[in-house]
Structure formats: C-alpha cells, structure tokens
Amino acid sequence: MTGCENSESYGIKLNFRTDNGYDVFYAHLNKVLVNEGDTIQAGQAVALSGNTGKTTGAHLHYGIHKNGESIDPTQYMSN
Image 1: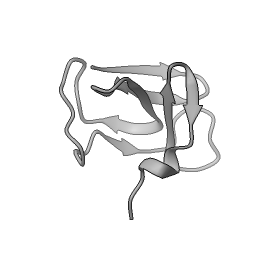
Image 2 (image 1 turned 30 degrees about the vertical axis):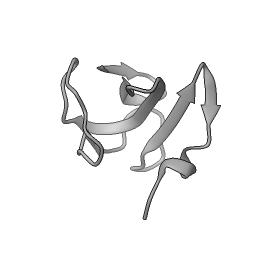
Image 3 (image 1 turned 135 degrees about the horizontal axis):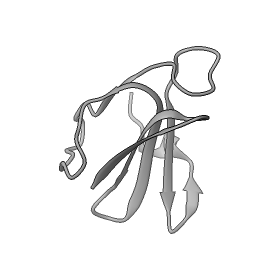
Image 4 (image 1 turned 120 degrees about the vertical axis):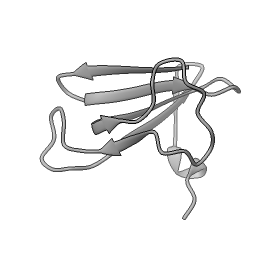
C-alpha cells in the first residue's frame, strides 16, 4: 500500500506499509515514482530526493515505525 501527501514541514512525503507491518516513509521528495496501490519490491526506486517542505538543502528524510513506535532505520540500510 502506498500513499503520497504534501505537507508544510515534510514537503512531498511517500508512505507505505510493508507486508510484515512496518510503516515506512520518505520525505522532502522531488518526485514520487510509484502510485497509490502499487506493490513495491525490495530495491525498487520509489522516489527522487529533493528539497521540498521546510529544508535548508536537498536531503532525504527516512523513517520506520512498528506499532506506532519509531525504529532506528540504520538497521535496515545496506552499503
């Protein structure tokens, strides 16, 4: 499940839920590459980072939640 919103602070923000119940978001995006209802595969490009919302420069804001609790996303990142 995917959804996109535009907020004052996050700018363009992409939200989705994984099959195992994690809520993931990417914010300050320039462009979203997926549509609501799309199935997303691991490693798939879903958006282009940007400088939308309240930022001082282009960057990506990435977050993961499970049961409403924030999770450190570094454990899900690879080099």
